Image (cartoon, rainbow, N blue to C red; front, top):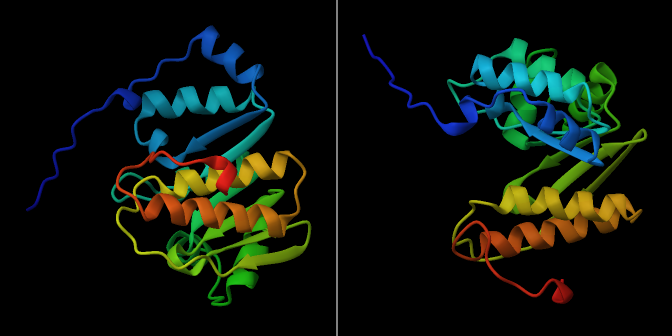
Amino acid sequence: MTYAIVESVAYDKIQYRKALENLVKDSDVFIYGSLAARSATTRGTLLQLLDHADEKVFDVNLRAPFYNQETVEMLLKKASIVKMNHHELMEIAGWYSQRQVEKEMMQALVEMFSFKMLIVTRGENGAAVFANGSYYEHPGYEVAVVDTIGSGDAFLATFLANHFKGNSMDLCLAKACKIGSLVASKKGATPAFDANEY
């Protein structure tokens, strides 16, 4: 028999406080991930905070053994915008159908859970978005990969910043793919760069 010993970390013990509720109420966007739901304490806090959030962005992060279908579905139902990678899309869409075409899988999830937008990253192959009944994609940028840590977060931050400025989906995807690729081409999750160059 094999046992896994999982060390508790700070985000497993986030207690609900009025100050957190006020912070969420005062924010335009609340971004949350599935790893935050691995402990009962933080999961309960997260669910309470989501009730006070305006724009809810779910950054899916499936890491075995810290998720199950029931919890992921619960978090998907709360979201207005969802971002996941292509492996996560295959797994989650596979819970409901045997579709294999990316666009069809994305559309099915958007319709099932009623989010406004689903973003799927594909690593070196760019990303796609399904929103408002339309499908958009970008092939990505070819770079010499040094360290992928932080590239997904950089992608999402860039995409959202451009989306909330009112930029087109095509421009949001192009800029997000560019910054995600830039981060992957450098060491560390938050490399320094001149944003004006991108």
